[in-house]
Image (tube, rainbow, N blue to C red; front, side, top):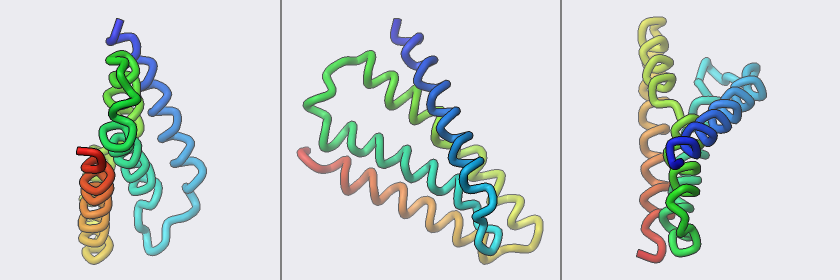
Length: 120
């Protein structure tokens, strides 16, 4: 049954990721992949809140699987982040590529570290 919840969450997360891509498709300052950064940050924020602030309130293993493995797994996109970074390098946009990697990793790690550590 948990696999079904992961499947449903993954589909909804993928649709949410698609929505962000469509909504931000014309917003690429200096070719910076904003939609991927936003999706990955929000996914990390959701995970951080689930394991930090709301850990005691989220008791259902099914809901955890739905939210963390399913929704956030479908919503976040390390493969797209990696591909966009490589494409920036290949096109000579080294500064944007390095900024993308540094900002993405620091921002996502920081939100999970900070919020995920609350109440632990």
